[in-house]
Image (cartoon, rainbow, N blue to C red; front, side, top):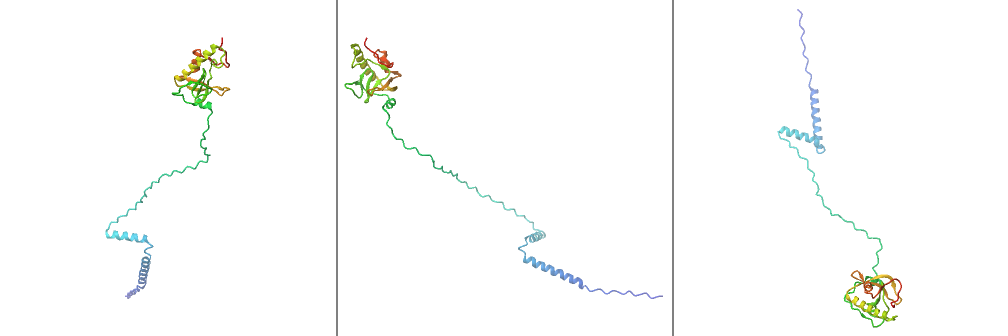
Length: 229
């Protein structure tokens, strides 16, 4: 019989390659760990997972931190500021200067006389006195009743005119002393002797109208008429 051939065993190869690969990995891990340690402040994202993994491994429950609530600043109330009005550029009117009023305007605006007593004038001028049936002085101003015509006293043209003129004078004195009255303008202006033509009113009625009603005067028509028949 032929002899069987002997199987030869292969010698195991040395594991030097595996050991070198292992030492390389260890060195690389060491370098990475040193790098991570030196740059630990710059890598917060690397630290957080590791801490969470450590907490999970240790069985400690991770409590998430609440985000801080932004606090609102208190509102400060500010007082409303009213802007000052600019000074007006319009001219300032001057102070009122008193102006003397004409005599006729003063009489029109005069208040009714109260408590005045009228006498009979003895001369050409007077203060409060009666000259004839339609003329009298009041506070130094000569007044003539503008709405009537009366008989002339001086000079008279007949005895009848003189008698009626005297009666009209006395009656006007009594009416003026009876109560207060108001003088108003007439539009006739002044006479040639400086007398002021006015209308004397009392209780809404002219004193001249009352003399006309009593037959002691006539209504003024623009010209004088004779009182002698």
